[in-house]
Amino acid sequence: MLWVMITLVMDSRQGSQLNNTYADIEAAYKCLKEQYGVKDEQLILYGQSVGSGPTLDLASRISELRGVVLHSPILSGLRVLYPVKRTYWFDIYKNIDKIGMVKCPVLVIHGTADEVVDVSHGKQLWELCKVKYEPLWVSGGGHCNLELYPEFIKHLKKFVQTLGKPKPTTANGSEKEAVVETENQSNKASKESETGTSSTSELSTEIPEASRNSLDSRLKKSKKPDKPEKSRMSTDHVDRFRRRKGLVW
Image 1 (cartoon, rainbow, N blue to C red):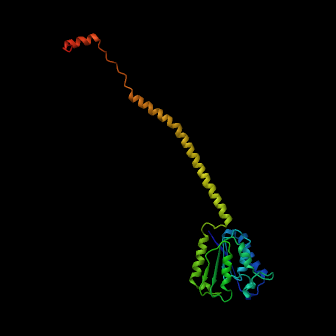
Image 2: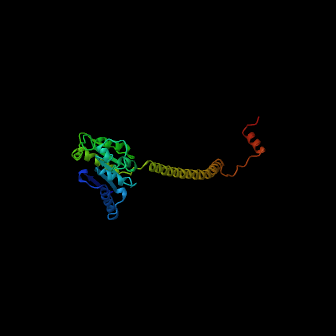
Image 3: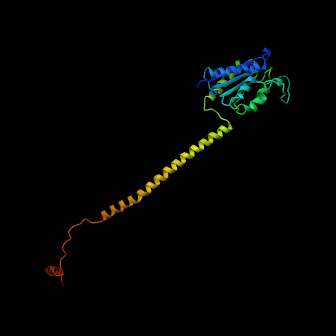
């Protein structure tokens, strides 16, 4: 299957307006859908740094995505500057509030020595994921050099290969599949049961016939063939025979 990855990498120093960043990823998504016929289940969204904001915004609104990769993501714009405990109305890229609405597998990659976005952002987002995938915490990795570490490509490749297997489902989907599987097994069992009952009934009708045949064959064997009976000697003939042979005393 062909995978299409929408990658959004942005630098906060670019001064992009919030609405423009959302429009960028929407335009890429619309182009893939309308002009190239790409299905949602073929899409993997990849967001790095501030790009994780528009990525999670789109992912939270598409239920059939194949997967999401968050590279050095942020909890929210304000939380990069201040360790606030709540989300304010003027905050931007509120990933902490949207990550729970993503229904596909999410891979989080973050450097432990990130000097721009602390690794705690990636770890907290991973904890909030609905469908978790094994994260990658790059030891000693910074904010813009994770691609230089061999484990980065290796782990990313493993994630994409895993998505090539039967699509992971949410809890409801799993229950639905379980129900379908149970129904299939029940139908199979009922068919086997019906087949067994039919075979038994057929066998039961054959058993008496076999018994009769067996009985008839035994009777035929036990019955002597019809032979003319030897004529029995009369008593007089017997007496004369005995006298002749000196058998009478």
